[in-house]
Length: 168
Image (spheres, rainbow, N blue to C red):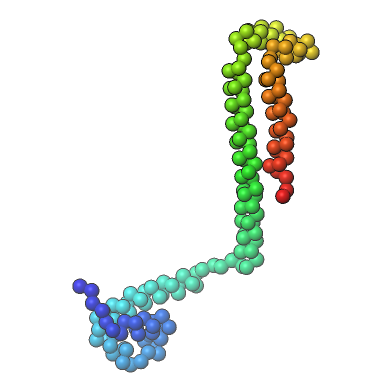
């Protein structure tokens, strides 16, 4: 059964102000001696207050300069992370577009061009030297749309990177 006493708040005030029991009024001391609820409150609250005092004594607060330096360091790290997010997003979009471009290019190449490309690879790989006639044969085998897409990609990638990293 939980019971209450009307003098609990007075006792808590005396305990938190460190007036218990020396600088406390005699009436409150007499009441605590006769009231079981207030006697238990003195035991429990004294333990909590002693624990709080020991925590205050043991606390090691760093100097203000260290706190300021850490706050500045954290702010710089957060700013760097925030600045890197758009660039990471652009890189992800570029990688995704590159994969889709490769898939689209592979799907648009007719079977006859694939056989020409395989024959060209068989001829070119043993030599290891790529000559201008080899490149000319390769470009003749590829459709014009593929060359335009690769050229646009090579042209627009540096522009996209420029806009992603430029200062505002």
